[in-house]
Image (cartoon, rainbow, N blue to C red; front, side, top):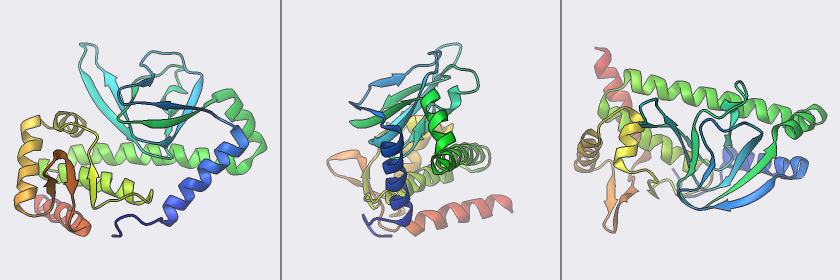
Length: 234
């Protein structure tokens, strides 16, 4: 896989952002790591699009435990889940400096009625979110621990690659504890699996930071998940 080359998927993301910018004229704001653009229980009024940066969605249980339930990259929408109940069910937290575009939901509905291409784009974004949620549930339900971690790294790298960003070297925006939380694993299990992957030379860590990861062979990650899945089926 190229380290950082524009892809057709990346071009489509850029085109969609241009459409949003032209038709909707969204409100722009820059946020920093840790900033929250909406909280669980907050009344729903706006949808948001990520023009740059990374976000995590966090749900809080009745006993106060936090659960990472979603990850967002450039071009992704935030807030779809609040439409049905007119209130947000999770917190949307920036993982680094990011630019967020916001538009009132009522304005989006009117614009979609007048611009079929915009409506098609919104429907596709909703469908993609549903598919990603389903894939996450399937991974947690069916994959062994090491394959879950590898599938997560593959997903992160692929998400960067389709946006024209480096996929062979990148910085994880989540701590090991958060990765475990997202994948339904303990911190110790995530650390053990990552060390195993280093020994297998599927990944390497940058000497400056244990969050900076190098993937020498992107396709080897895919093959690892396929082998582990096939082995568990027999």
